[in-house]
Image 1: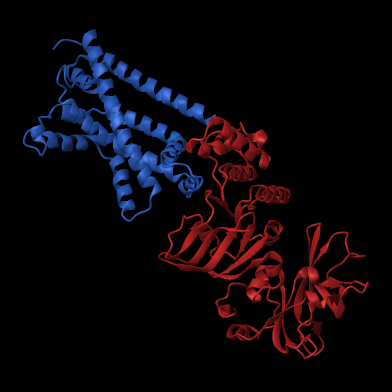
Image 2 (image 1 turned 90 degrees about the vertical axis):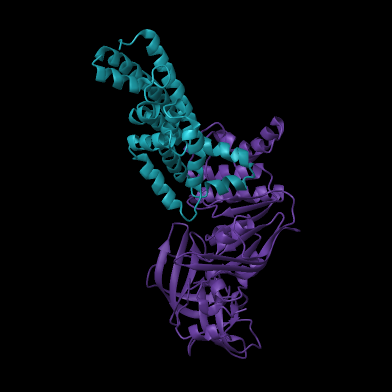
Length: 218
Length: 372
């Protein structure tokens, strides 16, 4: 195996960003409505659901990876889709890891609003579409926290994407799995180069979001 | 006058693991251009009624009927300030209704001016004080041109000056827009200041509804009397001349001629005169000051008389030629036309007539349910 060349570094970084963006969008797309629903309604079984969400936040990614890998394994329930060691399987695992974080943070943000917030907005005769927009605006700081947490979980994850993607060159190799591989091979320079890119990405994105968050507070 | 919103045979049941609450209202109407004050002790169902009028409460039975075509809106006890500027808060509902920009700014400017917060328009709404948020909430409500406006404790945690100016602005806004208003409050003086009519809720039922002065001066029973500030309540025996005998030595002149028998005597504190020598009212003998509390403007006295504690209010600088202190003996007087006589003919009344207390604040006891 050769050390990392620039072209592969670029390809791996690009793939990582594409996968992360997809997973993040899916996790937010599912998690925000679910969080709003769980945070604003009172119904039997709500506590159980919240318990599931909270334990999901602490679920070891490697276990999530194991479950998703088995799901897509050739003889598994979704084996016919032939998605074992695919980017789709990786995205599935990443979404499952990030989803509980998003839901929990949105639930907390919605719960911190006034108890009768939704009723008050309703009595002003504001249409449902606008009410939802107002709600998102109201919990925007919680949403930013959810984005940061989800991004961190997705971008730095290694175990589950290894299990579901298999680190196939040119197909499913991402920054974290490549670092793992080069470390195992003793090619530390390549591993460090990848690590620097990963850290740089993470810091840039988190920094950007934090800046937005503080701008809001002032 | 015409009713803008009414309820008929309303029944609401709220059940939780620890409690059960029922609200039953036979009929209640909100009239255009009038303010109805809903008075009641904590837990009497005031807020539940208001939420039912706003259509926010599931009904067990009965109906809430909208006669007016405009929106029904409510300002909650703790109004929210939406993220964004004050003017954004006032405009948001108008924008969602798709009004044109000119109409939106005209209405929002008018609403802000109505409640004196034009200066606050560009400020972030979440940075406002409690009183300012209340004004914002009222401006926001008036901007949508409601036919019915429901206010839950609108004068809560405001200082005296703010309460007074908000009352004035509210009164003016009602007169100018013709909106029908219901105000839920436990602040009797504030309610009297802003309302045209009063509805008294006790234990989940409407006990009395009527014009303000009628309810204040002719409460249907002792519990309503205590709630509307008629805090001097004494059991008595009316004789053939209309004299209410409290005991062997004490009596109160009334106009209840030809209605002899046991009765409750009700007298608003402001109608009990002390130490007057100008022939205003008939003397009922001396009493001794047992409580004396003053806020600098209003002094509240409790005076022991005939074994009861009678309450009266004195306004600073008015009426009294000297300072009053604890233990002072004062000559008391009243006008017979100010004395209100309640029949004492129900089972509930007889039960509670045994103890000789002036019974201020003893509201909401279940034993009074047959009074009407």
